[in-house]
Image (cartoon, rainbow, N blue to C red; front, side):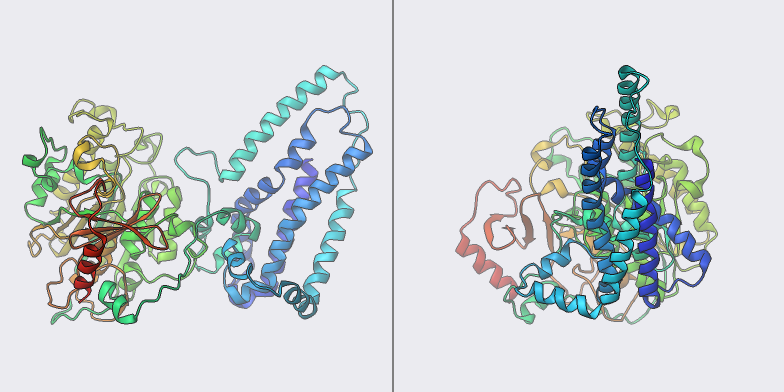
Amino acid sequence: MIYRLLLVYFFYTVSRFLFFIYNYSFLEIDSIFEYLKLSYHGIAFDTTAIFYLNSLFVLLSMFPLLINTRKGYQNFLLFIYFLTNLIGMTLNFVDLIYYKFNYSRTTVSEWNVIKNESNLLQMFGRFAVSYWHVFLLFSLVTALWVFLYKKIKVPTKPYAKGLFAYFLSSVVCFLIMATLMVGGIRGDFKYSTRPINLVDANRHVAKIQHADFVLNTPFAIIRTFDKKTFKKVAFDLPKSVIDSLVQPIKTYQKAVQKHPNVVVFITESYSREYLGAFNDPSEIKDYVSYTPFLDSLATKSLIFNNAYANGRKSIHGMSSVLAGIPSFKDAFTSSPYANQDIESVVSILNKEGYDTSFFHGAPNGSMGFLGFSNILGFDHYYGKTEFNNDLLFDGVWGIWDAPFFQYTKEVLDTKTSPFFATIFTVTSHEPYIIPKEYEGVFPKGTLPMHQCVGYTDFAFKQFFEAAKKEPWFENTIFIITADHTNQIYYKEQYLNTINRYAVPILIYSPNEEYRGVNDELAQQIDIYPTILDMIGYNKPFRSWGRSLVNTSDDRMPPYVMNFNTKNYQYIKGNIICIFDGEKAIGFYDINDLKLEKRVCEKLAIYFFKALLK
């Protein structure tokens, strides 16, 4: 069985080589060393695909049946083996041709494009003629594969030493193999990482197209199978209406362009509920804040106490904050389009001469951040590997926030202005633990999360106290937000359909250029255009968000959009609109956060039209 699985690895290596030969001008792999390095990283993605496709074969091979060495059973295994593996190999060979048209590995979305074509047989015939050499290569590879498969003969009596020994050894080997397969399918055995996805191929590459070489097509199909991918929907909307709603192409004109440093904190699970500055105690009975430092910082900042996340997961927050791409049914990074070039605050600041860095104290690659940061174009990635001190690892997610914040500050001390840095925190997260030396220092509160919130607030305090002593501090704009929400205590205010997305947005500038409390609607995708507006960027760029500091008469009206696991939520003015993907199914007053009582539909539509005017 191991021999037969190794044959699969061998032929995946062959198909990767053929993929390189057919598409070398697009892949831009410049040396043998680079080819070998990328091929090595591809083994992890090959393993996932191979173990998925061969799970039934492995089970049938190792199941302790007395008939499993008979010729008929072995022929049955041969059938299962080649049925699944030749499907996978066919998909790899498809991309020998299709990649030059699609510039990415084939995913399920391609099927959505061609499934309604009525001439699929004719198309196949045309490809067979035009690319006869690919079909010939596939036939030769298949023939060689079958030949090598049959080179190893199975002993006719593997249980010659006794049935008990045979069954026991089979069970033990199966359990070992099952464990290895789980790790292989996930990509590793770490608790802190999610199963590898398309975006993770970018962890290992310097050029975006190299990720397609690292990947294989069966992996791309498997990881996008049954995903609710982003689709273009033909709504009959005039361009003037779209421009009035979101102004997708924006240009901010400022008299003076400036290049301040910008530091963005995306704080893990930091619900707006936890921060006193964002809550009116008179409206929440017995309200308690767990963020004394951030509350004090808020008095010298511009804060948005009606701000919302665009998604429910960490990777949703990263794409929303930095690229202005909201996540709906699925994360953008899990979609087939994740590997394309993306205009973002990172790519624009790179062009403006900024040094760009992403900091995340978890094991490098955790949550898909390393891969997506490479797609966005960050110059540097600093993770647990670069921190290089596992004594400060929390044992689950990453380096404790306080020491990692200090490490971040020390790295920023070495930067030449202007620089842009994003820090994604880790400690305020399940299993809700803090360093032992701080046990009892912060209020335990009423939820396990509250002590972690206090600890991370303390980490912020230490960071700012140290940073303000450095020369770069005075010329830096700090933005603090959260990726998503977490445990809820004040249920009346926050345990509802809308406020489950309630996060803080705080903008702090040491010269107090931005100060006050803004009650307008705000969302994560607003942060990207806000940064460009603050630095005086005056060229056109694409964004669905709006600048939170733009006060011009023609500024984009505030709105919020997200997805509540079943429907889309769109908030504008005094109305909440619920949309099922095809039609609006309900309108609610903005104060009806639980969506309990629909307002008059005709009145709501009239109100929306008035907003457009």
